[in-house]
Amino acid sequence: MKILFISSRNFLIRGNGGDMGTYRNYLSLCEIVGENNVKVIYLSGNPNSTLGWKIKKRINYFRGFREGVDGIKMKQIIQNSFSFDVVFIESSDYGTIAYHLKKAKYPGKIITYFHNIEFDIIRQLVKREPWRFPNVPLNYYNEKQACDYSDVKIVLNNRDLVRLQKNYGPNEALIVPVSIRDELKNTDTESFVSSTPTCLFLGSAWYPNVQGILWFVNNVLDHVNIKLQIVGKVNEILKEKINSPKVEIMGYVEDLSQIISNADLMVFPIFLGGGMKVKTCEALMYGKQIIGTTESFEGYNLNLSKVGAVCNTKEDFISAINKISAGGVKRFNSYNRDSFLKNYSFEATLKLFRVALEEKTKKTISAIS
Image 1 (cartoon, one colour):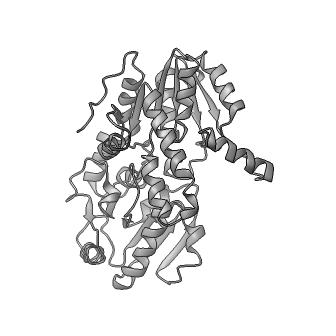
Image 2 (image 1 turned 60 degrees about the vertical axis):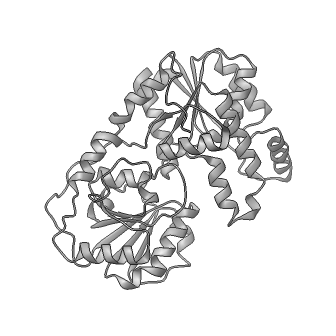
Image 3 (image 1 turned 180 degrees about the vertical axis):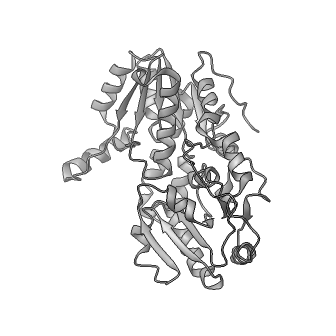
């Protein structure tokens, strides 16, 4: 079997959760059919932003093409596709590719992966950034095309499946949760959370991350005795907004393993978004105690009374942090580690990708009323 993998992300960088999800998808396909049988086509935009490019971009929008796709790129994809058994479209943002492949009578299987229900995400963002409104119909159009013309659709969780059906009508989809390769080597399973715990937040510059950690700093930080470390590209926005001796803004870090291992707790005050949070999967992998909102655990099949603490208000976070730092709680949460190995490791989801690639995969998950 040969697979054409179409991606708008340079997933080898793995700079955020989306990149890590794309990389997982690519590795899974390579594991099943062999790396030599997976060809990647990147959908890269124009970084120069000249006037001519901006005009061309708007014209392509009216044709249903997102940045990275135009008539020339679409022709290249179609020409390449006939040499492959499967075309894997790595984002529902590019559902129009599925339409054009079917129109060209591509005989193979088309699989589209939904990182989120993008139409829902863009509507959330437009409420705060109205200038994004032109993307709303474009997102809707592409996801509708993905639903109508893909042979297999992959979503992250049941919530996204329900939203898919709410927005686009009855649809079947295969649920494949977030997973990552196991990178835990040696860990201290006996140490206890310190009385002044180091609390770690991971995040890209995505709005829900910025909004969530600023809320935490403004509402919780002064009421708890902690050291807060913030890692990731979210720091590019936070540097001018946070000034506290309790906060260490560390920026982008290539290797997170030591930083996560050294943290007492992971804190995830995320109130918005869709899909699943890769940072939660990372915390599970390292067996960390997690203090997060309901949103941060969305899509995970966990006993939430064992993960650390679920907090949705200022009072919840203050109480949970103070209780855990009072003593007697181990830094290593064996329940979280075991949950990762069982359900969210690379090996755990590999079998689901095999299902997606099966020749007659059509009866994945029935529509939910």
